[in-house]
Structure formats: C-alpha cells, structure tokens
Length: 323
Image (cartoon, rainbow, N blue to C red):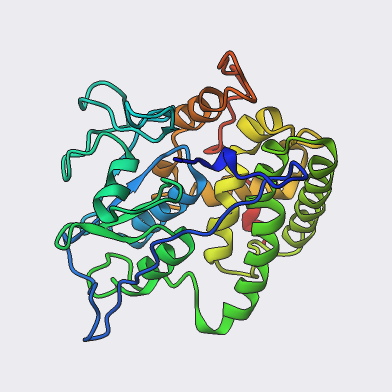
C-alpha cells in the first residue's frame, strides 16, 4: 500500500519518521559508479519541503545550479495514480499551470511516485523529495537530504562557482554533528512530531522538547553569530529551513504556538541573517510552503483554508553583525 509521511504513526499516536531508502553516493573516487559530472544529475524538489529546500540551498550557495539542474513539483499533494487513493507530490501538466513548478521534462513522470517506480519495480516505501536523479543511468542516486548536502558540499568542488565555501569543515565536524543531532530531533523533526501526533501525550512530549531546543538556540545565538561559532555551517542551513516556516505554518498548522519565532530576538534576527546569504532567498517560496501544508493535510485542516498572515519580511535589517 502506498504511504506518505502522515501515515507514520506508532500505537501510542506518536509520529515516527522512517529512514530513506536510496543511499548511493556521488564520489570523486576513480571507482565510483556515480562520479561528479556537470549536467549528469537532476534534483527533484518541493519548495514546500524543508528537507528538499536544504538541498536546493546548497545548489545555490555553492554555485552548482549551472551543473545540477532541478525541478519543483506542485505544492499541494494530488492523486499519484488512478489505481489507488495515494496522495503525494505531483508535477504540473504545463509550465504555466503552477508558478514555480514545472513538468518533468526528463522522464515524463506525472508524480514523484513514478520516479521511484522507474528506479525500482518493487519499491514499497514513501515517495519523498528530494530525489537526486542520474540522467545517465536513469535511476535515483539518493533520496536522503543529509547525504545529498554533504555530496554537494565537497564532491563537485572542481566545477562549483564557490568551492572555497565548506559548510562541514574538518575542524568543526564533531561540533556540527552534535548540533545536528539535537536540532533534528527537537526542531526539524520536532515540529512534525507535534503536528502529526494523534494523541495529547505524544504531542505534549514533542512540544516540550521543541521549546527546550528553541530556548537552547536562543541562548547560543545570544553569544555568537551562528550555531557553531563564527562561520555558517551545515547546522545553520539545517536549522534555517525549519525556522523560516515556523511562524507562517508550524505555529498554526502544527500547534507550535507556545512562543513565536518573532518573540525570540536572537533566533528571529538569525533567521533573517541566513535568509540574506546570497542565493538563500531564492530557495524560499512562501506561497508554495503555505499552500502545501494547509492544503495537503485534510486530517489537520479539512477545509484547506490558508491563513493570510503574518507575511514576515526576512529581507529587513538584522542585528547579527554585532558578533
């Protein structure tokens, strides 16, 4: 049976995300099945999805978007096949149907599900984005965003426009890994654990951890400009994609309303700071973000009504230069 993330529930009513499936790596090693080549790879994303958006962020800030092409799906889930009721990521039928989304010109797929079934005839997992596609071998290389961003960070440096930018430098890797762990559990995945919980107890457990972690971030950012001291790293990009969605979506749709991002002075200004990194703003399509969440989860928002606010200007001045 075709599944989506909203179906991943434990017996206690808690949301439990399952692992990604395609885990091949693009590598500069001479024996690699997937060497870094300009024009060979294609990234399928949704602007609405934070996991996909962090991959697109790497394409933009590393200067790889001339070498790795990308396509975004429509923001609102649709029927992926006539033979069942699965709802998931679908492509528009024309390049004018949905601003910001394009048809799949590579494979003629109607949905992300079609790509998974092209790559594996017996696939039984979720049909998620991002999908890193190999045009040459006509298969999925990888669908785990944490691994895709690491590949973009190092393996394409010979053709990247910004090869000197290292978001996972050797001297900071232990610090970054530690930050990633609690940020993922408490914040990145934490908002989903709040929003997809079906019972009060797992919701309250998730929201407690979420705000403990947000408070921890606020404390760190009161003393330094970025999560791992004085330079932008992978930890900042991974945190940003959740923060940029927080007040617009998670506070309302996922019941994360104990405190808004705008009420955290350091976190709020930090989010503006990351947003204003050259290339980052182009990865944020708030119309897609809001239409997806409010329009694709009828069990949470049955009428699909999209709140009109708060329309935050993340391009406005921030105070992070003080560090």
